[in-house]
Length: 334
Image (cartoon, rainbow, N blue to C red; front, side, top):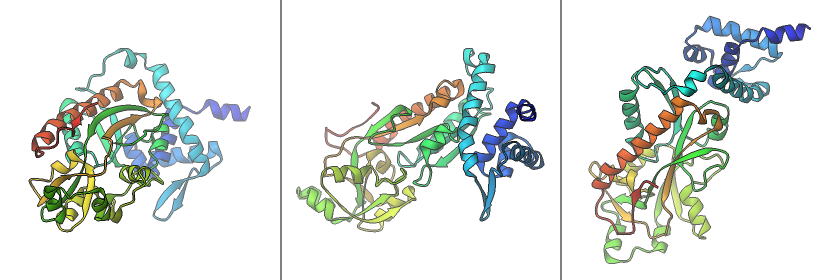
């Protein structure tokens, strides 16, 4: 009976505190996100520890890390909060989302592979349409398990490029882009291209630079495709700072292989140029991915539409900035 009495004392807000503490892994940040105070959240953490019989968060270096029990609880907590929203907020489902008055929070994990202007443009666009909403932009890196993050409600949306996106997630195609090479203007391969001597063998023998893959355990889209063709290139530099790679290219003999949309942004500011890639590549396709947890949410439906509109808007300026290209190349929305 005592156990049942304890269960009856658990309210929905305590579940929200539990989920926020585990995802933030920091009492101060959790208090800020909950619009509460640190002493109040600390007291709620103490109560949660008593109810679960587990410390939930433990010290790890200068921070805190969730226990195995906490990691088991975060998924059910996210599902419970989503179910409560559906159960107790019928008006939210039937009424139109009003971006002008909403104070919703959107949490996005994204890479800067798409375009160096994409995230700044997305923030500006969303804040014009919905001035009171909040946004948290997280890096999409190899250390971040985006599938778990979506499933546990840690993030609402993930934006990146995949050869084969995970089947359990909803997806929306943003755009498809041609794979090209970015090189310094004085790179010897510029003359090879002009003379018709730019071959697959010479491409593979160049010194290449590539971004660090943002899928745990993966090599990256370019490496995966080259491997499927039985090719291996000389990859001499890996960088987690993708936006800095064009400057590396401009000051070296490195070759960057990626989408034309990204490369074209640097043609007017750096001594670099775009050359075709001699290896046949499928189009580089960018997606936004989301979980069933947020699929029916009106605010997140609206937000996904804004992401698509920003991607569509960026295509025009990038295409006009690019030099003339072969007729079989494209930057297009699927």
